[in-house]
Length: 220
Length: 99
Image 1: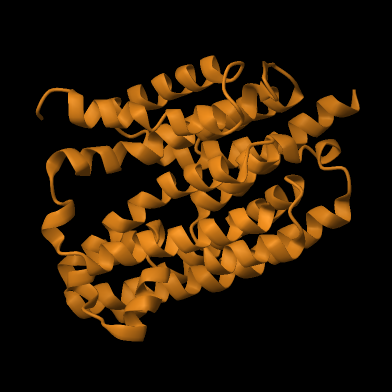
Image 2 (image 1 turned 180 degrees about the vertical axis):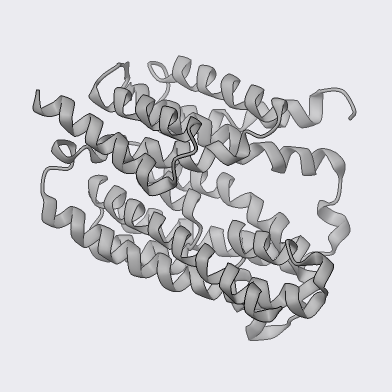
């Protein structure tokens, strides 16, 4: 049974790790150095936020709006941590490691083992988290080096690769009608704001949509 | 400026992850907060797609890049895997640049 979990973890780690190539390339396209791309992957280690930083900086946004957009996206990891804490039950250095590895994939694989018991859930979390960490950083380096070697990013279509990567991250979240409505309003509002607000601000403004949805809308 | 953004993003990203592990569960268990957290990434990712596809500084444009993203959407609709989606978008945009 543990073997099956390790196999799941490895396949998730490899698949997600490959996104790292897209991130490394996107970072270079946004004028980050290879070192900067790698440091972001090693320290921040949360894909969507990392894409947000380079996306906003690449569009000419300020450091503040880049950090704000990335941090808003990182809030979901708090909720994953909340879910994982009673399962992992770790303290001290182990808790710091667990926090750093708390991402979409490690949480998802762990929660998927719910019927198999706590130790299997822990195995799923650690194996997936460590696996993704290794591959994500390795492929970030490869993507950044590759994009540097290619030269002019637009000529290779990297300008389209970044929003395509965002779309790929968004797609699995559009499973409910509410999610699709939130996404559509967000696209509409954000596009409308482009001519009026500094780069990065239209993205941050869209955090208001789920806020209104959750706090002003009817009790459900 | 880039280093500032990298260090600040990394620090906040870690603190957000650690917060979830460390705070009493009751703090974040409110139904409205949960709903907000569920839809926040959806809204932000959709906004990022919009800006990166249609924005060029302060102008709304439809260019080679936009067509590349459109192709990515079609690929996702037909359940193409992530690397294929990204490569198709890049190839489309690059191809149009070459015309």
